[in-house]
Length: 266
Image (cartoon, rainbow, N blue to C red; front, side):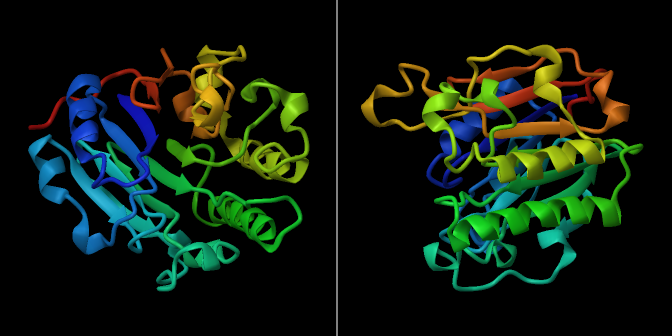
């Protein structure tokens, strides 16, 4: 099984790119973030033509998460099961991320997948940063309430936190800022302590591979980035990881194949 996660930063704007990548990379499951769509505007037909079932949770111009799978999707959960998201959206609601479309979960091929789009947090010490920490805490609470580390589970997406200093181009330059602060990393470590493993690091332990860059001042070309897009697996899946990669051409997709591959559904 090939699993990928991708912050597409507007699914409709990048739909042709996504379609071409699906044909080239042939994932079994793709977690999507920042789709920027309402559920009614989701391009279901495009995904069906490519051989995928799609479930989506969105609010319009901001946020939005989805799961695409070659196998049927069931037991869908949105917003941690906490009810509908708000309708205001946008920057003014960033300090209330639990009212935004940032979480969707579904079962495919006997594995529960969770697609997450964590808040940015903007600046340490602000109400937006406090909202980010509260949201990350809700992820851990939801796992405690609904899941088990002994069951096959994939939690992935744009977590907007670097797990450690090896996930930053220069830990000293970024020290203390959002994405690298100790409280954020502690919240991410709490997910791993629950029973999740960073699947990418099982294969690629070294520094220098990132999934986000500030595109100003040539930072992509200089590889001055951060690894913010993650795939975490529970114990039943860890031993099945055989390869991992960050696809810089798609800017980027993180891919973690498992053994065995699912049969391609057309």
